[in-house]
Structure formats: C-alpha cells, structure tokens
Amino acid sequence: MKILLLSTDEFTAQFDRRIVDLAECIIENGDQVVIQTLGERAKLGSISGHLVIQFPRTFKKASADEARKVFFDETDLPMEIESTSEARLMSFARVIWSHLPSRLKPYVHRLYRKVTYFSSKFKGANPNSPNSLADLYFSDAYGFWEANHQGEYDLVIGTDIPSGIAAALLVAGSTKYWWYEAHEFATEQQWLKQHHGFTPELITVESHLVKRADVFSSVSKKLVTHMEETFGRNKKSIVLHNSTRSRQGDLKTQSSLPKPVLDTFQVPERIIVFHGVLSDLRGLSKFVEVFERACIRNWKFVLIGYNPGVELLKTLRHANKSTLLSAVDSSQVSEIVKMSDIVLMPYPVLDINTKYGFANKLGDCIAEKIPFFYNKDLEAIDEVATLTNTGVPFSWSDLSDPEELQRALKDFENLTPDWEKAERLFGWTSFENTVLELLSDIKKVI
Image 1 (tube, rainbow, N blue to C red):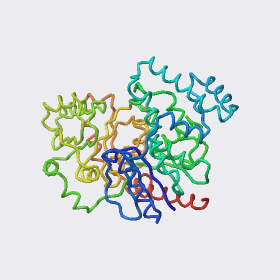
Image 2: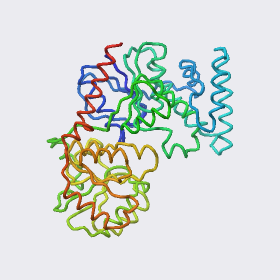
Image 3: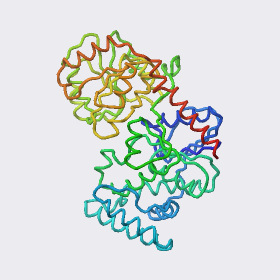
C-alpha cells in the first residue's frame, strides 16, 4: 500500500515525533510512505525503510479563492457547521446551495467571501495581510493538491487543517481512503480564536474534515469523543496517544547531549524537569516561586526549553534551586526524561485541548518509566495517572501554598507505578497495535 502523509508543520519541535513515529509504524508494516511538508526548516530523524521525504517549497501557489473553488467544487460543501448563533442562517444557506446550478456556485461563493472579508475588516483585521487564516490554509492546501492530484496513493493522511483539506481533495470522487489525523481541536485553540484572521469558515472546514474523513484520530479518548459530538461524526474514529518507543540503551543519543545539560543532571539531588515552551501562560514562574519557598532538601528543578516568558526570567533571577537551560533537539527529549526523577506537566486549563490533551512528554514518561507531576485538572493525563498509578497530581489553585508541593513530593516517594499496564493502555504497544489494525482493515476494502 502506498501512503501519502502531509503536514504543514516544520518538523522542528512539537509535533514532528508523532508524525515520525506514525511513519515508522507504517513502514515496519511493509508499506511505503511519502512524507511531504511545506516547512522551511523541515528536518526528520533517521527513518529506515521504504520512505520518501519531500519538501515541496516550489509547489505552485494559488490565490485563496482559486483554492476554495477547487475545494468546494470537489466536496460540494457550502457551510456545514451550525454554530449556535448562526444555525438557522446556515441551515437556510445549505438548502439554497443544494438547489443552485453548478455553474452558479463559484459566483455565489465569491460573494460569500466578499461578505466575510468586509466583516473581518470591520472587526479590525489587517486588509494588507491574508483576508483570514482560512485564506492562508487554503493556499497551502492547494500547493499539496496541485503537486499530487495525478499521483497514485491508496491512503492520504492530513495532520492539520491545510493538509486535511488537501487529503479530502486528493481522494474526492475516488475509492481511495483519507485520514484526518488531528493532534488537537484546531478551532478551539485559544490563540486561534483570538487571532484577527479567525472566521467561522475555519469551523466549517474543520467540521468537514472531522465528519467526512474515512478515518479520524486524535490524542485522547476524551478529545476524540468531544470532536465527534461537536461535529456529528458517525464513522470510524481511533485514539492515538502521543506514544513513542523507549530509547533505553541509546548511549549515542545521551553522549550527544550538550555538556551543560549533562553536567546539570550529574548531581546528587533528585531532579524535577520541564521541557518545552517556557511561556508565562504555562504558569512556570508560579511553580518556580513555590518550589523555592518550599525549601525541599535534595531536590532540584530544571527547566529546558525556548521562548522563556518575562515573568519566568524575573523569578529565576532570585532562584537557588531552579536552573534554566536551552532547548535540546526533539530526538534527545527522551534522554532528558530518562535522566530525571519526575517530569512536570503544570499546564493550566486554557482550552479544550489542554483539558483533554495527551502531552508528548507523557508518552516519553511511559516509554522511559519515569513518573510525572501534573495539574489534576488535566483530565486526559489524570485518567492515565489514575488507571496506572504513574503520576502525582497537584491542585493548581492551591499551588501557591508550599505545603501542597511538599505533600505531592511525599506522595511521589510512596508511588508504585504499574508500567506494564501503562504501556499496554497508553504506550507504544497501544499506538502500534491501533495503527496496524487500521491498515489491515483498509487493505481489505481498497
């Protein structure tokens, strides 16, 4: 089976390992994978097998309206989402659209786009930038479509909205399969909803991707169920946690870690580690402050990452037991986890994605058998900890009290993790079995 795996991500930090792990799993099943990305700084770890990696930065670009015309002509999708404030209007629009002659649909949709444009402009959008984020997404999707619409693939996988649009287009009118592999509920992201280029059209498109894809997946059962119920999906869905393989015994990777990192971990103290984006939105300055006040003997807090927030930097200036280091390559994160005693996941619940998300580091913890320390309001992570006894919860609202942190670390001392169960339910074994079962089912019908 020949598979096309698309992503507009740059494969640099956050989601590359999930895509690489998926590709490796498919290749080991004896199938061929072509990965395409529009990222300017795209890079992948070494993957053996029948894999082709393409960086089509020379793909033909199209105007957003041209890309839309292709999409809406092929999918016959006018407006499929019924938001609470616009449900009646959307329902009426669908009826009108379904009775329009095909030759008139491009003109009607162009009129709709103009109305959307002036509405966005009235709300303060910059008319010199793309009219909306949807314009940007459709343009990227057209690049993928134009390069591949004459190709022969049995399965096309889109991993974000632009590549999901392209996947839908590439199989339109055929018996081929397409898979929308969503690492998040895109239009519920806090930053996206607050962006001046956000329009209801993005919800319309995400609705199509979730509802119509032959296969839909996301990172936790709670997130999959929530998206199914939101968009009315009644086809096959699967859960793919952010699981990864254990890197036990990978001495080459460990020896390649920067010396400041190795020196920081070669100390007698036990280490709590956080790796990732060091934004103030993650509450890390608050955690540092409480950790320092708690004066916990034989413990050290190490932060490794990029883009540290102003408040975090200010707090670290007065810290004695907390250390900040630059980010390491994503392929080395598992080694950082392996050298730690416990991994911190402090994220406050900002939107449905943090509430129901399955952090990449959680997959590393399960693979390397390292406990985690997490905000108990993170429901998907709390489910893992509750079922497998692999994590220690803390109350975000009570974290200003050093005694809460002291209590949590005492609980860590008494923790008896069931790593075998964690691997079976949420680890690489679960990830691999789910993917292989899906591919087997697809091969039976193509």
